[in-house]
Length: 219
Image 1 (cartoon, rainbow, N blue to C red):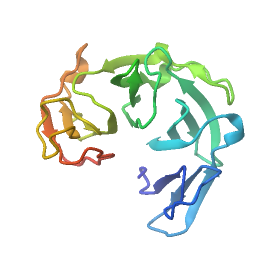
Image 2 (tube, rainbow, N blue to C red):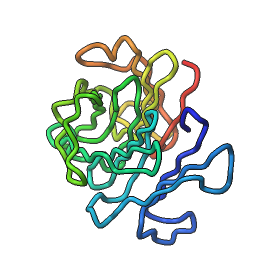
Image 3 (spheres, rainbow, N blue to C red):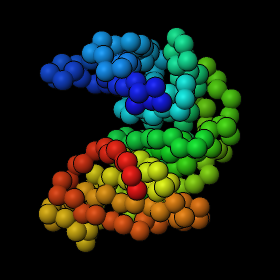
């Protein structure tokens, strides 16, 4: 949902019925309407891949794709692809990752050399875009979090500035009804996020191995 209570939806690899989607699509639904008010396709001919998650920051829409790219669109009018970024020295695998935006920082998750990470990226420090060609955004990374992360699949901030993360799988010893490899819900307190090595102060074992996504209201 954006500030105008409009719902943005990503359609990536298949329809609800399982049919293949050859052209990924992003749509906006206004004021509870069942009819799309604005939509655009992600141009596969540019080698952008299939979008997975969406995050909004005013009139800027961010997508991550299965090709390890972060796409930036200006949606103030007719949607325009305004940037393509990679983070090869920080995250070399965005598969199944997620993203969110808070106070000028883009937070994205993925893996680097097999180690799960969440990055904080200073949006204003990202280098100039190069049309549909990807640009290395490593220099804009201000925070790298690894503690407590195991295949993160959902990021969200509450009103107090705490970061919540859903892990698809868990480390040995994490509590949960799935004793073999449970997912987990963890929280990084706002104060921890200002440190060099943020660590969670809450870790809740979940019964499911593959929880994906979350929404946070009150802290």
